[in-house]
Length: 294
Image (cartoon, rainbow, N blue to C red; front, side, top):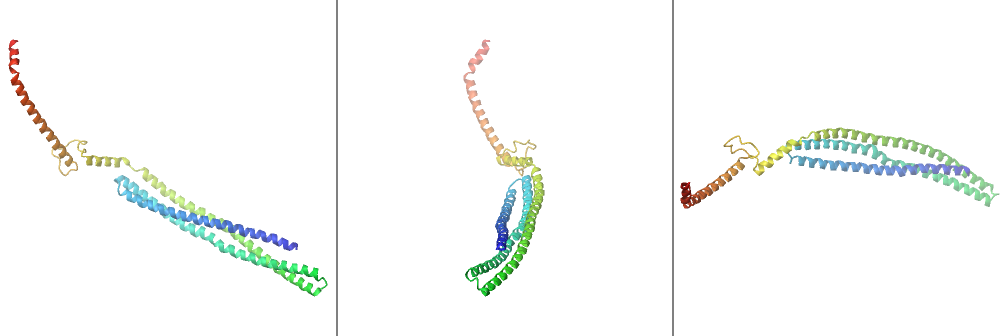
């Protein structure tokens, strides 16, 4: 009976090993699968960002257009590396963790087989004890029961040895796999981030070298053209500028306005001269008289 109790303790330890692996490997598998999906979603969102950056670049001035396009190209490279990261995570991390579902199922089948053998041994022992209590003089029945117990005990011992080997191999493989899976995970992440850092460094340098003054100058020039004040901000180098120049229309409108103002001023001066002549004619005699008095 002590042997049976010892086997029970041994089996419980084995079951704990399998249950622990089932619990945590299942969680690892779920989380790593989610991690991989989230990474793929980040790749998709980044692809959309690349598209929007290119669309936006086409609406901007030359310097910024070039800078944004270069940035979009670098960001697209990062997404290529991220795609490789997703594929490697799926192959080297998620799939090996998924395989543990079948491995644990097989190991549990071995445990179930052993439990059946152990239960049979316990059952034969209980029969023997009952027979000894009820029919202590029936040697033939007792001998048969003892034979059944001996056979069940041998089967249990053999099954226990097989189970020990199975659990030992399971634990050995589990330790190797957990090490390899997370080594692969770290390697995949390091490779991606190393490549991404290199690309992002180039993107940073490109954005930092962007000359916003050129675009600002071009923008201000366009604003002056659209408002018609560009010609006033530039020195006049020709009396009759070519009509093909972008600011010629604005200059013509300004000249037309000046000509109208000059015509109005001339008319006002003419009216003032007429009034002056009239007033001089009316007050001329006293003035002339005053001069003679002197």
